[in-house]
Length: 181
Ligand SMILES: CC(C)(COP(=O)(O)OP(=O)(O)OC[C@H]1O[C@@H](n2cnc3c(N)ncnc32)[C@H](O)[C@@H]1OP(=O)(O)O)[C@@H](O)C(=O)NCCC(=O)NCCS
Image (tube, rainbow, N blue to C red):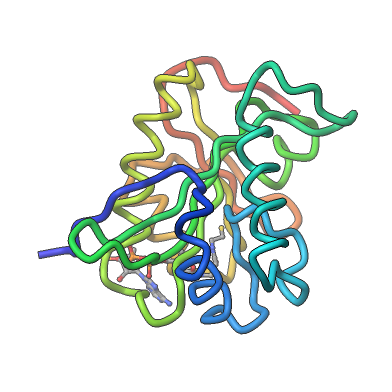
């Protein structure tokens, strides 16, 4: 049985769990976390306060964003029973030219100690429902050609490979018209 998970909004009351989860990545990429430079993540309560506020603002369609940025719903992946933080998943509300080529709508990562237990697959299933609620159809999800775990996660979720661009496998899920680059 895969581990039951839930997705929750970034939340300052989970600050120490968040910092623990981030440190487990050891400076490696945390796709879907909103942490752009994994070698300089938030390290204390002050950083996390600012970080959580930024994630919540980014989700709100009323927030004005700098040119080239799109609204984005970030969620923390928790163990549904223990509340332990297991990773991150985020959904960009629309595609920019860069996201259409490389980044896609949804990004995710699972902390190293929790990998290969079905966590990314379960989180993606929920995020796809949330994407549907946001009216995103089809959803684009990409991964590096040499990332078998992410590739398998997307293919299990029904991703249809369109092509590989600059080493990125580009998959679509959903029956809406596919935007063309
Ligand atoms: C990719 C990643 C999110 C997978 O998370 P996960 O929770 O381990 O994935 P799951 O357990 O749901 O596994 C999904 C499928 O991929 C397979 N898989 C997972 N890791 C794998 C690996 N390293 N090599 C081969 N297959 C792998 C699993 O066996 C499973 O397939 P199955 O159900 O047929 O057995 C995780 O390895 C990670 O966070 N990596 C670093 C960040 C990253 O690459 N994010 C994705 C960017 S596109």
